[in-house]
Image (cartoon, rainbow, N blue to C red):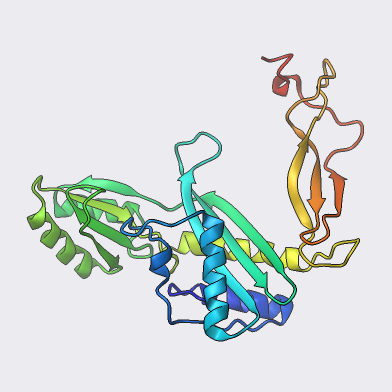
Length: 271
């Protein structure tokens, strides 16, 4: 596992306990080249592309045939689109068998941001942002300034960085934001752990046709009928499971045959 932010300490014990798999921590490549949350290095490609690249580089450096990697993405929440949301994936690549299996978890992110003008306001913001348990990043002026100070996880360092950046700011302002790197963000660590457990569940799930691990739900099947008019709604009736190798599929019901949707969820009864 190639990482420089302590993710092997989260995932290693899980894989050892559940699979008897020993995780080797790999170094020798700066993973910041694949994208940073401080926005000084854009991520080429998708979240999955970055995770896959980390796993492949880790295998190349270690000479091992199995690669493990984690990658996070911060997006608007899928419900109302205004809350910070963290999507975490953990990828397992088996070069010898040609397998790629991905675990995933998502939830509300610990991602606070604010423009601040004096030290008392910094202290208040930091307390609200659960500092120093969660780290902070500071920039002069605003969120797009290329200068920044990270690795702030004690009050003395935070105060020194604030005063230095405040002197550099033409507006007399400093932009503060949560450090989203895994080793400075315990909320994110918890989601990485959940994604690891999802990966383990998939690795323990063999295909009923070819016995390849990774057999899991890939999508929901909508169509639960309205209780009032019988029209199919967008609510799910089943999940679709698929094998990562042979493509075997099956639908697994989520509801009983007699269950119906409330008319409030029906686009005909409640357009």
